[in-house]
Amino acid sequence: MTEVKKIAVIAGDGIGPEVVAEAIKVMKRTEELFGLKFEFEHGLFGGIAIDEKGTPLPQETLEICKRADAVLLGAVGGPKWDNNSKELRPETGLLGIRKELGLFSNLRPAVVFDCLKDASTLKPEVLEGTDLIVVRELTGGIYFGEKFRREGAHGEEAVDTCVYNVTEVERIVRQAFEVAQKRRKKLASVDKANVLETSRLWRETVNRIAPDYPDVEVEHVLVDNCAMQLLRRPSSFDVIVTENMFGDILSDEAAMLTGSIGMLSSASLGEGSFGLYEPVHGSAPDIAGQGVANPIATILSVALMYRLTFGYSEAADAIESAVKQVLDAGHRTGDIAADRAQALSTTEMGDLIANALEGAA
Ligand code: NAI
Ligand code: MG
Image 1 (cartoon, helix red, strand yellow):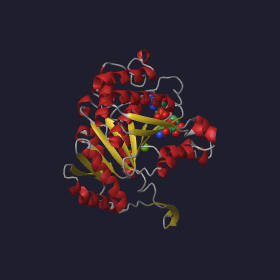
Image 2 (image 1 turned 120 degrees about the horizontal axis):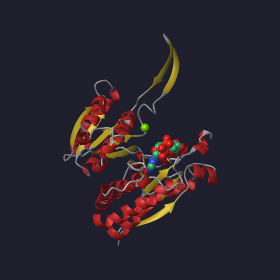
Image 3 (image 1 turned 120 degrees about the vertical axis):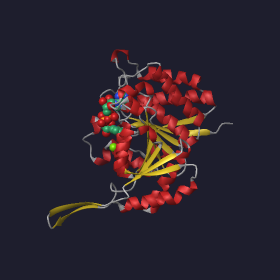
Image 4 (image 1 turned 60 degrees about the vertical axis):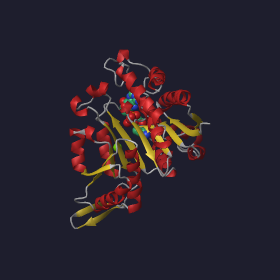
């Protein structure tokens, strides 16, 4: 008997429900093809939860997530809630859910599909073969350090402090090693160890635990050099692990190697195999309700879920190759189409990928 996996589905606002529906369609097709079994439980989240429950993250939604094996999230937000007070903003729900679920890392793959490499601003020959993932620490570092203003000898001073403890560093670095073991077994640890003490602790920690992962090849890269190498030789990276602020910047830089935001998936992980999976993009209010959003980012987030939370690598491979097959055949949604008049709808794209799974299985 296949073990039933519980999926919490929080579709959210705008195009969230539209793209999540296509991801579920793909999951259901993989149940048939690979003998998987999922139980979906839906929860309100974001703006719609504010409207119906008076809070962006209702307790019952949190309970649904906590009893699930993985969470599939669409997107939240929209102009309707932009002027709300902080507690009644959809984004507050996002921060809350990450904290409540103990998610301390954010993973963002940047994969260049050969047939789309002309869409990037970089030369196709530079992008060839790019398939990397940025693992960003999410709960520590300068964004969460003590901040204050004071009067100094030369006028007002502003202070931000960057603190990392060895436990925080070790847990994310171990997670990155494990992700590398499931990929091409190369880990680039990015720091600024020539000037920052937190980076020196980071680097010592990587070196101390590296022997536990003898199959993974490790290199240390200074963050400024990494920013350059991402544009010069992106295909040489497999897994990049780094602290919060460096990861914020490098993951956006890496994302732009690939072209459209409608193609980018992400995972947020904590201890163990539990994870929250979502497209990188937002709720796209400008196209919401029109049925034209690109569902690929959300569908690729399911492939990440299969690989990282469930170890369903065969089904994950099948989803990724079905997406590639559909794109190679020239099918496009509006955001990646050269000719918008020829563009597919969200559901047409979802159907094509779900159908292509059979050939990829
Ligand atoms: P956005 O990512 O929603 O949209 C940016 C642009 O990309 C828009 O022109 C949109 O139409 C397009 N786009 C995004 N996803 C697409 C897709 N799947 N297919 C085709 N085109 C797509 O970012 P924006 O406009 O800055 O934010 C809109 C709302 O989303 C805001 O309320 C923001 O706070 C929220 N947001 C939520 C996130 C989340 O839930 N994790 C992340 C980013 C923004
Ligand atoms: Mg950012």
